[in-house]
Image 1: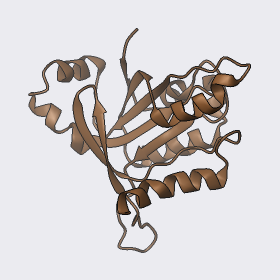
Image 2 (image 1 turned 180 degrees about the vertical axis):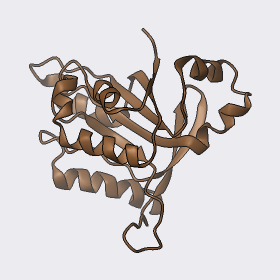
Image 3 (image 1 turned 90 degrees about the horizontal axis):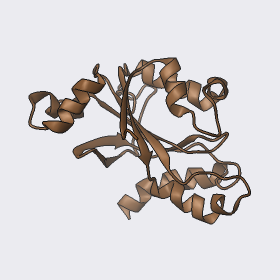
Amino acid sequence: MSLAKVLPFSAENIRSALSNANATSEEIASHGPATYLHEYLAFMQAATIVVEDPYTDADFLDDFTAYYARCYSPFGRRCKRLHFFRRDLTEEAFLELLRNPALEEAGSLQTDYLGFVVVRPLPQTVIGRCILRTYDGDGGARRQSPVNRRYRVNLFGFDLHIDGLAYQEQDTVLAACATVALWSAFHKTGELF
């Protein structure tokens, strides 16, 4: 089982990477949040997707133990995590960076890092915890991100960080609108208080 797959950024590859045993790429194609995610990342000039599979996400594991482990349907407890970069990477080049992190190109991974999305193994609400780089400021005319915080990310030994605020798609079974809004708010207020 490969732990990493490197794909060029495209609508088809995003759909494929967001799919799982309970949601096919065809179903993801008509999924509103997935479509928005593709458009957002295209605007942010994403060029590469690195798929970390399998991935254990603590937030999903909480939901899994509280609810999904007791369901009749056999939902998995392991997720995938998709990392996005502005730079073009091939699988061979990425593996070379992993083997030799002292390479000059490894240092610039941080500059090109756009963030990550956890893919939950659910049939409809596949987008779990995600932290993406926010839009660049526009002088306060439209876009402001006053509640960002820094998240540390370990990608196969590379220490990366992303400034943003955690988001996840609301799961109507466990985390309805207010629950997800509070979960996101606590990511910032937990740091402040």
